[in-house]
Length: 178
Image (cartoon, rainbow, N blue to C red; front, top):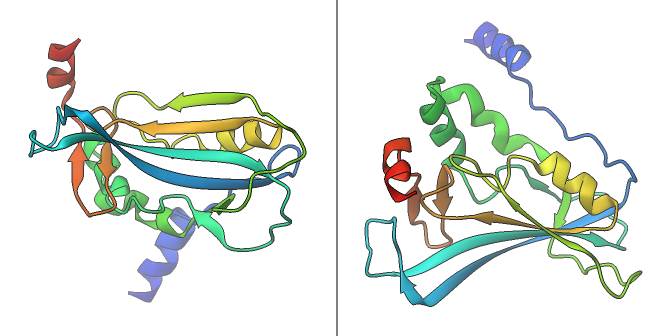
């Protein structure tokens, strides 16, 4: 068992995100919004109101040396879903929960500027707002605010704060909607 553990640790190391280009501090917040005017299109309970998850990354002036967010924070089912979607063994991405990003949750936005340009990031079909974290953090370090969106049914899996999950539709189901 010990040799298998050592072998797997070498084969699948817990990677770290490189420090951003400009070495600026990054804050992040995640929000769950409810659209009271539309019903959910993709979940099991289609009588519920439509909900989406947004994560916002932004520059912060605070000096941050600890408490970096996890790469797969609040999305524990994501690694297994990605494994299943692409036919990889389930354990292949399970170590992602130990990976830390360069962002810290819920710190104040930098007041160096009065306004920041905002970029919207959507991963596309079977993706996640988490997939391009390194790119997003580098954009933020250069003075942008980036908003990542997880649209239920389109991304690999959307996990809500109450524990509900909406998995992506199949390629065939998605094609029928286009």
